[in-house]
Image (tube, rainbow, N blue to C red; front, side):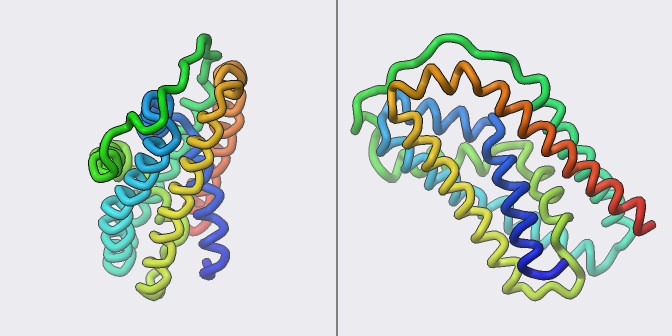
Amino acid sequence: MDFLHGILVLTLVHTLAAAAPGPDFVFVTQRTLSGGRRAGLLTSLGIALGLSVHITYSAFGLAAVIAHSAELLWWVKIGGGCYLIYLGINGLKSKPKTGSIACGAPGSGGSMVKTVGAGFLCNALNPKAPIYFVSLFTLVLSPDMPVFHVVVYGVWLMIIQLLWFSFVVVVLSIPAVNEKVLRTGHWIDRLLGGAMIGLGMKLLFSRAASS
């Protein structure tokens, strides 16, 4: 897979994953609703920085696997495809939510360092992240890929994460939007879930075709 194709694949998959509800989404939502827009944006920055932990060990660790063990890479791809399908099935099971939460007063989200640090830890300590990032990089890494490309991929994923959650924060900062998001969010979850299943199947079939 060439560099630009890899960028497009990562953008699609990671945007879907970031949009799917999870610990990061819940945490950003909570901080935004309780501490206002500033707290939400700082938390989003911390979460984006937290990705660096998973990106580093996943990308370079998987690169080493690709270089030294084609058989192990085979099983990693199978596991990665299954995990993406698992995420998609969870999305398809999404149920309608009821109620609403009022936004807190701006400026009540704590100090900048503490707020960013809380977001960083929320992402860095996510136990599901290692499987996801190994699955993600399985789609684009190749034995001859330059280290520079891997670094660019990693930075781009962090930017996607920051942009997505910043968008979420801005939207949730609008009180009138809150109720509508709760009412229609399950349909969005189901649509994203179907897309994730498709990507997981693509990974599994690409492995079968190359075997």
